[in-house]
Amino acid sequence: MEHGGFLEVILESKATVGGVGTVLALALMVAAWFLLPHSDRGKLRLIVTLFIGHVLAVVALGLIPPTATAHAVVSVLGLFILLIVITRTGFVVFADSGLLRRWVNPLPKIIRDIFQSLIYIAVLLITLRAAGVDPSSLLTTSALLTAVIGLSLQETLGNMFAGLAIQAQEPFRVGDWIQLDDSERLVGRVLEINWRSTKLFTNDETELIVPNGVISKSSIRNFTRPTESSRLSVRVQAPYDVPPARVREAILGAIRDLPEVSREPAPTVVTEDFADHGVAYWVRFFMNDFQQRHRIESLVRERIWYAFAREEISIPYPIRVSYAHDAAATRAEQEAKALATRRRALEHVGFLRALSPEALDELASMISCRLYGAGETVIKQGTAGEELYVIERGEVEVLHETGDPKKPLQELARLGPGGYFGEMTLLTGEPRSATVRASTEVELVVVEKSAFQRIIANAPGELEQISTSVAERQAELKANVDRTIPGIANMATDSHVLLKRIRRFFSVG
Ligand code: CMP
Image (tube, rainbow, N blue to C red; front, side, top):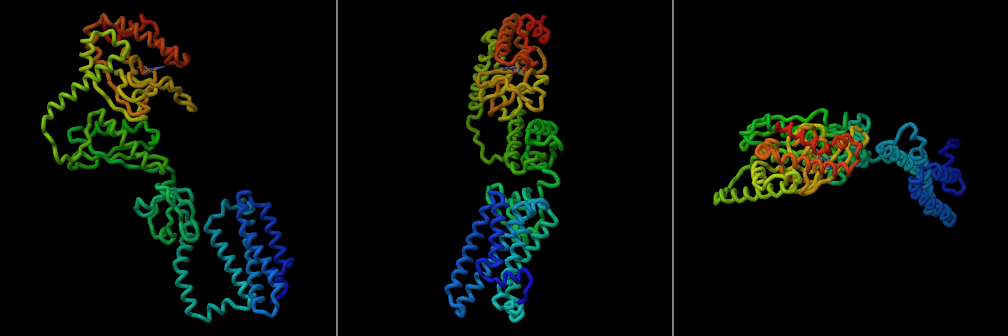
């Protein structure tokens, strides 16, 4: 063995405590302790254990006669452990202490793995050499061994080079959402790319480990790049007798104010097919949170369901068996029940108590019910409208739109069953003074202006009492909330002023 080289000095010192190698290992371990962040100090545990193994080997050497075979074996083993300790500690100091992180942040797992493997192979070869074995002769003397090693490494090397290609080309990075081939099962967020495989975290909250070789042969869809925006689709059918323009308007209106759906690019609806049970529509929209895609698709479907229910657009489905027995009687019963529900709802509205029971019966026969899903906007501040709503079931929140991007909505009130809203626009025609949003699924009884107008035409005398009652309620609402809010400040609490506005709006002299 030649003298002079650094490695030779270590090899010559073999496994002696106090030798250059041992001193170097100790120095590196101390440096690592101080340089590594606290969280990474656990990595030194294995190194310290190995170092203790090395010290034990040295102690054993003192006890075994130098001529015994065991002496040579322990000596080589001690050297092997020492070299591992030195190289591993050196690597940890280099890669984890922040020395390297200044340039590469963080060192990709695959590069770490390959670098460490090369170091360990080098240590093994050096140790073999020190033991008097020429590693190259091992390979060249046995063609069979070479063939076996070559074959068994074929796959591993394939994965490793595929991993390096992924690292170099960057079709995806750690943190990206990807899909391999067209398989729903192979969708996940990239957790790690190592020398053998790529780890994905799927929506089932499980880890999916895909060999890099498989990835290199698959088509890859990246949902995070070039932008985080990706398109989702929902398919729905509507009856043949509803015009496509009406269906499209209902769908777009239903999903327009969903915060999860991007405004730009705007959602679109394609009339896709004339299918067996109805016209098929393909709803396409963009969103930015791929992990939530199933929840967002579900929200969109639900919004469409509620919008269709309100617009009386039925979703066609195949009916195999139909029971015709006494259907008319059942329908009449249901209608009577619905009428009674609507009549009861009207009794909750304070200002309608001015009307006679007969007028209330008549009004109940002209109004309808509407269903809104949680989160849907029922009325929007500043818009025109013609309806009064009474809550039959569920809860809504009354919100003031502040125009301040930091706090765009301020809650004014929450209303439950029996509560009502929208009376100001119904009675005066002024724009909505607040936004009302369903906080749970809500069933609302809706009184349209046309129905109310017919009742008022027969009972113009009641308008005075109505305006007094509405003015009282306005005063109550005003007392309960911040009066500086513009909508609240404008609330008409003077019954004479209100009466004038109502008369003008309903053209009652
Ligand atoms: P309108 O202005 O037609 O539309 C918004 C509705 O919200 C309004 O009628 C009232 O019915 C209701 N509203 C406005 N302010 C409040 C409030 N402070 N508390 C409860 N309801 C309110």
